Image 1 (spheres, rainbow, N blue to C red):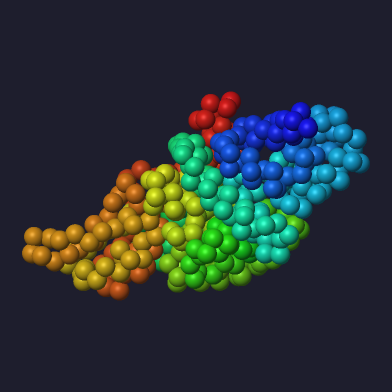
Image 2: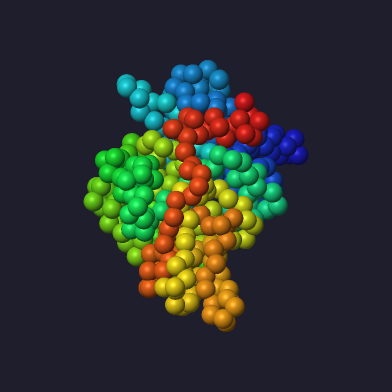
Length: 369
């Protein structure tokens, strides 16, 4: 019996080792092993552990795993239905890719609302995992971030508006995508199972372009037109949520609309000063003559990057911590006197051109290539 248990543990550990090699990474610890044992069957774990690092056809994966194609397809289809594998149509066949943890099977698990999984237990395990020592730093502690921030377009200064490029505008990213899908926010859904969710709406996670086709096919979201997505963008801005986008210049795959209490990315900034998102190319500025010192900007900031500080005359005015600020524009949009604006950062961030370049940069920075 002990030998059988050890053999099973070895299979799941091999899977964990494979997941840890992705550009995003997945540090191995007790919580990760518990998560994998609840999401993967033993046969799925064995297949996952042998997955190549690049998408491959069924025939090639069969050759690697030694499993007959018909049996392997049944396993892969089951994994794809659970969001553990991405089955991507190309021409007349499918290519299969092992889903990473982020952005991957964490999100796909909690995008589901009718899951047979014990989501409360998984929420507790993921919460414990993400707050384990060193996990956030290992995943996010590199120069190339998984995500980037998009500034509210309504607060972009007129003086620089013509200089703002399409990749910096959420509305233009949505228009260029041609439409997408709307899903449940994984972080907010997870928080609801922990009894910690805020009252922000859950169905505001946007997948874009061809990526959304897989989301819809797997029942993880509903189809959305460009107009549908623009309405979600407007709704979330009115609520003061932060737009986090895939950190690529061309064809981003998602835009999330995040709060500082549920979103793991913003919570890591609040709790650990760890950044998995690159700031936008803007920073808040304050016109002290117009500022009423009301503190609304302080209250609306999702990452506590603004504080009221007393001036020499005893009047309190907002001061921005530029080391923390991600340039979302929530503060400027909420300012009732118009004293808070946004200015262009001195150094403009150019994101990786596409997903391939992003993952290559991340892998190189982590010494994985």
